[in-house]
Length: 613
Image (cartoon, rainbow, N blue to C red):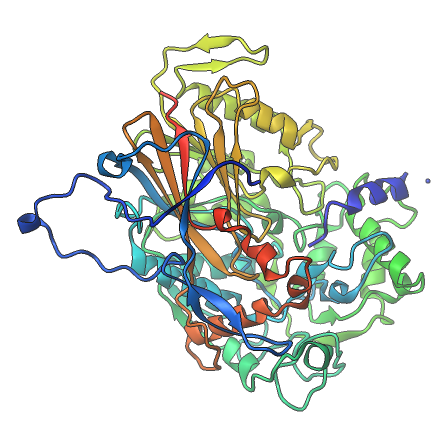
């Protein structure tokens, strides 16, 4: 992941909470008044959630295996409203939905990937700058997604309210590198059908992890007899037959819940960071690389001539080119550098399904997706196809307005921002379901409109709305975190914002600093590519005492913790989880894997908020 810390340096080069009260709860609440015992059906037995058990690392060596451990207690958070006694018997359920984020279905054999950045350090950049450039578990992303779909299908309802799922939402980065092949696999995983995990030669893995020449030691190779850095320094084991098993077709179950989606930076930008602009970039040249048969394995030689630290930054600056051909070397020269014969490379089977999707093609693919589980378009409609806009509204449940935002910055870099036209549109949608709000001057405005609760969905979290990089194809002003949050506090009906992007578990309460509204909760859910590979079930209930409760429950995939190679997607998903739990750049963070998991108050929660009407 190319971090936002790079932004100031690139510009310079181109121009010469959780706070509050937390209490413990066991999470056993009735959704509605309980019928008499003689008329009650047998209780539905749901799979365990992380309230009942978690998955923990075990072992004393450098490389850890996984096992089931103690569950994480559900905590009540009262930063935004007080908890009233007896609410569990009065509670009326309003909404129940799975929240998935950052699935990262990945064409890991694509020639347009930049795996070589994983071990490199650019000038002034932290050593973990390129953690997302390559991961040992990248050939297993379809299997992890299938394991999570099976788990959510086994639930079918909320563990707290027992309300059936109303819908599911994916908050972006469903793919990894803007490829048609990635989106096709994702949609098949949701609709059900045959998954072919390998592009090019469908029966053969062709990437950086097999034994083909040149064999580079900076990548983990699962077959025995190959020495690499992951085995010698980090204790990674051999998994004989893994790459062969990983490319075998399997039958996707299909999600049984209607679902909606957001647009993420990896859905639009090359490997989540690099822009493709019709006005400045030779799109056909990039497509030719992606669909072709030559995969580079190292930094192009012309950049290595600068030395690694400077060469990496020059490479990134040329690829990003945020001001449009501002560097002496233009896009055509950059493509020439990429294709130079002096760069270490290997041959892969060419594949036209690695086509780089336009916005309209992305939208059209969702409209063409199967009618089941629906809805048609998964939020996108003909108006989106005509405009190319990737934001929309929908009704997740009665009395609730869902607003899906596009927070990706087409100018490049992985963090986000929101353009001013989209913000104006968002405010119009909120006003239509708000009987009152505050204008920009702080004056209360009454509308006479019927009230609905408002939920926001986006890929980026508030803390990652930091990307001010200009989009030369769209000159509109881009709003960052502080300004955008200030706007939301003018609307009392906004109570919840679900997002992802960070790949870790966090929950933030956002009180209104002017105390005009009750504030809102932000629930930032983890990814399915990095540890802990979890999704969240979100439930909303009216306590009928002037407060709402938002329940968040983390869910592991259906894959068991013990890893073993087989053709079963669940076993392959288990290997992926174990590999992700041993990723050196995650394990060696200051807080280790605990950074990914967050505090207990970021995991299984009941979030209290004042009912706005």
